[in-house]
Length: 215
Image (cartoon, rainbow, N blue to C red):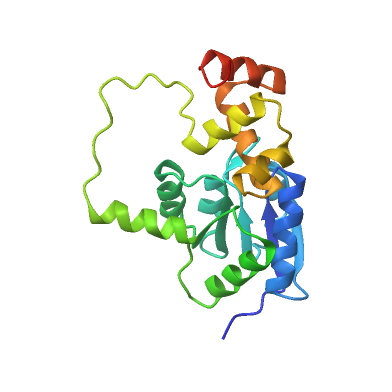
């Protein structure tokens, strides 16, 4: 039987993602009261007493959502909701006490189904994250090349979003082309801008040209 949650917290600095996550929570747990925060500082004002359930993004403007998970996990069902599907984000989040890890690559109804399943004790991971865990424990991880000079550490998906953005496509056009949601692309762009220390489309275009992604 799926537990009923009467209160939840959503922590994400993108308004569109907060709306999407809140809508999914309402579908999963009708009548739930939802507090939202755009930063760790705002979240700190909403966790006394701790909420029974929290959806937490990892890339926040004043730090990592992992610190909030470490603070809440003893009293709160903490679920990561992020665009990051790499080991460097996944495993620290799980070690911090996250009890679920879902990607922002699905529609509202699918996420609501996952949230109900996690609350009921079903596997708490997006399918691609579950496959990553299986691969991680199934075979030794090859060491990285001796010369790793990619200072940005962009993932392949981030690189593709940067390339398409530099070619002049709008966020929605990029989303349609890559079969992603608009808020997922916004999350990728946020990560790209942070990693490259840039703040505009023009700077993104120049950086993409410097890397040979566009002419």
